[in-house]
Length: 240
Ligand code: F6R
Image (cartoon, rainbow, N blue to C red; front, top):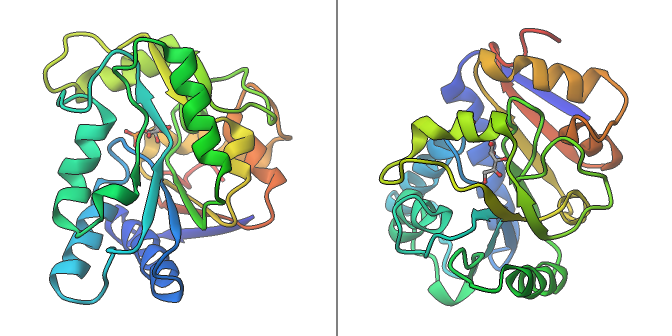
């Protein structure tokens, strides 16, 4: 894989933002695969800045998100849909008709997973953004997820529930289930960029890059992809 280590979180985020800008400049009607969480926030802020400065337009870009909690409507502040609108979509000139999100409020979760699986398959992602969990998850593909996994309903691990608890806005507990793109869906992207920042991610980064691919560390399956870029700050690269 391609590993870039930057001195600060800010520099690492800028590196990833620049990859997004380059992809959109090359192909203004590309499909971008997007993630939520704390890690991408600086990237999205930089993309919003680029739009405000007139350096890019996302008007023709299609987006597809990785995952969503079950049980939350898009309007709920803790939904990943609300996060995306807050952090990026509402201020960066995206076309609402080209935004693809999982419906967390779907009463038939299995049917929603099938709908989303078809959407994912309908067109390849040009650049897929990933973060990594402290347990090595990508999307909500928790330890035990195989390289052939596809869009499905999953149970979140104890580690993920604990990690996401402090990020809640209104909810008191992290939802127990989610719908996520699978590892095979992620590997279908033409290009993948995974950003990891902070010491808490160092062990997951080390396992993913230095150990053989293993279902117990889902991000290690990225080794199967020919064009994956790891972008790290010094702290996340500390165990390499
Ligand atoms: C979010 C996602 C997750 C996060 C991961 C890291 O859409 O798919 O895999 O990327 O949990 O989260 P943060 O960035 O909050 O540490």
